[in-house]
Image: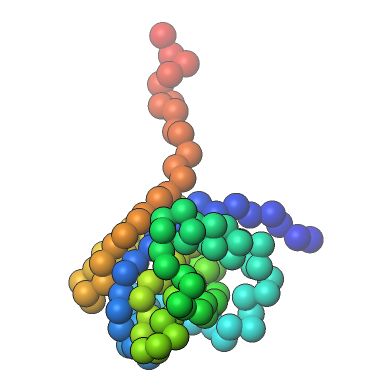
Length: 135
């Protein structure tokens, strides 16, 4: 049975570090990185990340993408690294999650590692008080 999911949060970080250093920072934040070939299952979500990159005005003409599927406590996260073609450094990292409250936790650790948060957006469900029907 296939379950449809929608993205619950997206975060964009400005990094300017080597690819190996970025992968180490992600692992120190508690993420397990899989190989790029496993991202084909989530290919329709990467179109959303591409649209976000264009709308934020991030220069992606002189860069190429490396897409990963990462896991944070068994929860899949999509990770896109924008690598500059000239210096082989990661300029931006885009993370997308299917559950809320995960990206702020990861963001705190990555900010301590010297990353700069450019964008963070999470969808939140509206919760009603259990007392709203009383009265």
